[in-house]
Image (tube, rainbow, N blue to C red):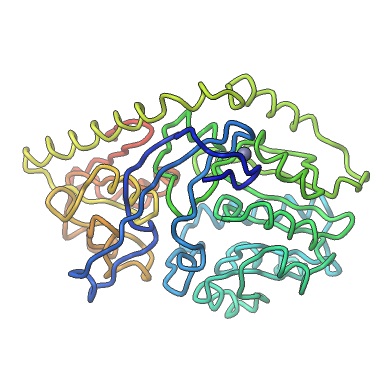
Length: 407
Ligand SMILES: [Zn+2]
């Protein structure tokens, strides 16, 4: 395999999560007795440009299709984040009714709706037609397609005052062509922002469950700045934000656009990454041992609790949970009886690989569980707050990552 950024041959394995099905491939009831395809999940680090990456084993077109079940608007903290971002950007860059804001992977319009409320014209680009249909119901102009240089050239050339993408950059197999598309679609003085989970947090907090097939790249600023530079874009600001366990928000512009000052934050974070060792192979070694320990602790907890006749369920049928469950080799309902999720698109289906059923949270009261494992640990405050009524059953909350924790 070659590096998707610099074409260097990849030899160094960063993590081996063995095999699992695509994380978002929920199993419908009628297929619960059918076979399922498991793919290797092997993560490499490039020793030339330090991009951490997964091979594109399953084509993006097969993952982000009509069966895609992630609807951004089902998380209230994520909606709040989107609203705050909109306020910040309008305040800082002064977008108005003559601007155009393009969001790549606009999902169900969870973010663009806030620009629309401020009368800023918007355009969403979204490959999954079922989420795009929800956006269209909100009157959010949406092109149903994958973003790249081809689409940018044909439909968006030089049009955007702002191009944004949240948690999309890592999901792109051809990241060079994708960033090239941004460069094409951006006005001469336009701004681009991307948010993505920071590789350094993944390593520091053992967030190996954020690794899955749909997530092709694991990004540091060190690796990303070259990818942008090669397509004529320059990162002029970067912010550390706390979404998804610790993310970066990068601001880029055309290299030739001299109207914006380069913030000292850029150098500060590059130096921070350098002092952690992002540009040295030893930084990436030893991660496998850490995640093997998490696996052992989690399985031990489940077995011990079960021996003591405890009722264990999960909350949040997120991709993260599937990586954890499949890496831990958990199958069926003998340890974890079910997983509750607020999204009606997931209820009634089964988790890929483990085949644990997904139920509506309304049923928690019937189950009266002893333990609820929170899979989307990034939303733990929100979830614990929503489920505070379970105190009356004596329920405890369990997190497997960054280490086994019982609350
Ligand atoms: Zn590389």
